[in-house]
Image (cartoon, rainbow, N blue to C red; front, top):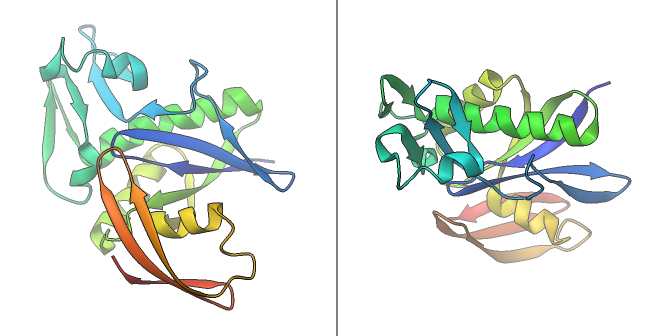
Length: 192
């Protein structure tokens, strides 16, 4: 049996969680931290560094390191890291693969299925690029969930409440304000 996880692929940091026995539990990365920097670097020997190790090279090896690439999902922008060239979804896939490995190490079982959060303003092209990144990382994207909807669910608004809610999503690289309408257990993003 493969486990299902949830991932917040953030502009600045990413996070993994699992819904287990009725509760959400955060999954630490290989360094014991819950937040994994969304940074990729190519080492001098050509190996790929992710997370904390990559973030440490932002100032010492800026031509070999990329961050905030989520902003370019679904575009033609490329990132030149030394002799290698990546698109935003390829860099995102490297972060997702690292998160998958961290989850498998922590849970002791294979992870295949994932629910991933995306900004509410992501268009169809950006969402498809995100799905592509998830698949490149060896994961099956069960669903892409709008970040404000995920935040509303995390705070229990899906437990019988109905009405209109304003959700502030203050991320490391973006600040979104969304108006959500909750009717009969269904969220609809009215404005972002």
